[in-house]
Image 1 (tube, rainbow, N blue to C red):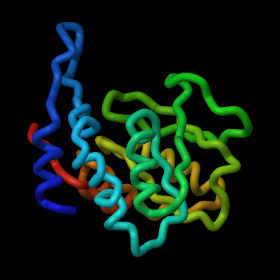
Image 2: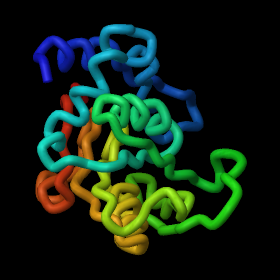
Image 3: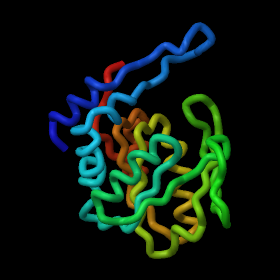
Length: 180
């Protein structure tokens, strides 16, 4: 990944105070989607660390993963499988394979599901997301892969904020770090 892309990711990011009832600032990554150069470079940058492992599919969780996942899949020339959350709207029809995450940074356990027919034994999965804070959702996605016989190769995220030992264990790669 170019140093210029990392610099632009940081420049286009901002923390937002959602108001007096909020307990924390909220990340605003919308500048990434508005910048055509960043948008064009994100997919190739996300897959670069895992290209040699030859992923056969990219999996990404709702919601921003639905933007990044197809960019990464296109850069690899493979398909994309969205991971749905029940609270994010209508779930897809057909059999779903579910996993529940360990507690995330807010203490929530997140349910994730993929359409069972889209992952199978022999698939080599690259997980992609915008931000990995605790790796709780990464773990749930790896659990889904394992239950369907697919092999999670690792995760590529724009920002990784989890402990280094967790990132190493789960093979999580970051494109950049952001200022506090």
